[in-house]
Image 1 (tube, rainbow, N blue to C red):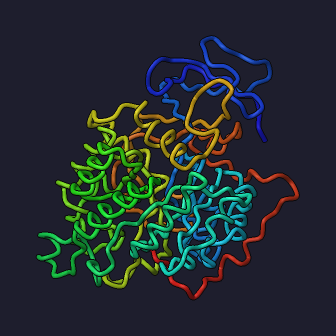
Image 2 (spheres, helix red, strand yellow):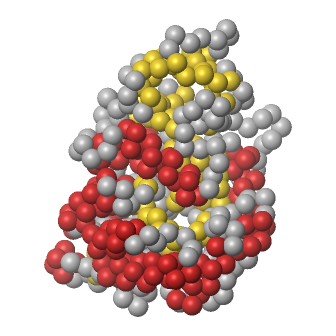
Image 3 (cartoon, rainbow, N blue to C red):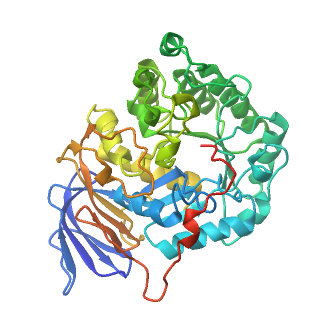
Length: 453
């Protein structure tokens, strides 16, 4: 339930100290010396206030893969990491390729209450790349889908990709591409380079990403439509996006926290926590994507939160699933890789983790700390480093690459529409109204369809 809150002495975007008054789920006033009778007061001295974080790339797994994650557990993880909205990828079972499935996901998010869940629709039926899904029906559904992706699979057929870009142009949608040429990555186990050669593992070459991005920005230019590039990971990809933007092509791009920090050197121990698609790249790629994020070539940071049960990671490298959980650690990793290095300030963090993702996904009411706007707020303490442990994880899966690693900072409060979901670093346990119990009995059943990511 929303209550009147007064946040005292917080650093707005890491700059001037101010108070924030929240009433009826809205930011009512920002200033100094503010108070409200009967309000709950949050002493935020030393904390940074950011607009509630927005993730454009989350795998919530429900329906179909509830042993990995559910909408409830995934949005609890989101709240713990400072997120107030997540875009749910469509590789569920059934695939989110119809109005019915995306409306179900929307309703599950509303019932959970920890974060706004905005479904992403599949580009093709069953994510098989053969024919377009019901893009128009999903766009006009109650879920109002505006982002479409076959993430986990590349829309490899150039004619299908062209048709998709043309179709979504009619209602201002965007196609989010998983850029991976399937022929160039058959059997790939890690980044192609010195480490893969030394380990004898089949490589995933940078050109397999870069060639698809190059093709798709030209297709987007040809039809005058919007393209978004998922989890960009190579120096060459940054160069292509930079060229496309200078040319005036309507393209945006994201980078994950793990591609900002981790490299393929970590694969030497065959720890499957580091197996991900696209793979961890070289230190040169890491530095290039950091520079691309700093200069605005890359628009946002998106987590690609991809939970898996322990048995899907506790196995030999070749058989292990791709993916990492990332909602709880993302802000801390961005702090370490970009803020601590001086490449971004906290206003920039607000842009790449909140305002720009909301804008790309056309999610109204998010991305700004302004009077009259919905009260989606993240309060972050940048001064309390600590070792990341399983106690920091609140979803169903614990396949984090950061376990045992020291990370800076900690999210202390998350406020979603005026409702406190993370309170002093502790999750609020149950946000559901009385009488709205939600059964999870089906959550122990996995579909036979394997998770692609």
